[in-house]
Image (cartoon, rainbow, N blue to C red; front, side, top):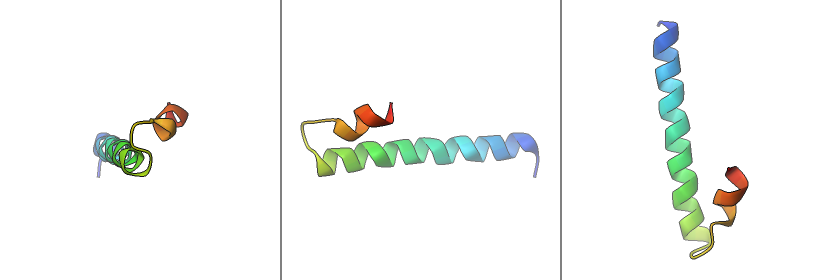
Length: 40
């Protein structure tokens, strides 16, 4: 596996985690982006 491939996978995982955080945030605290504000 090349270094670029590792980077690409890492970016995919990071983006997925970001999407999961946003979804979880909407489920846990609808109407207030408290988790999102902390993650930025």
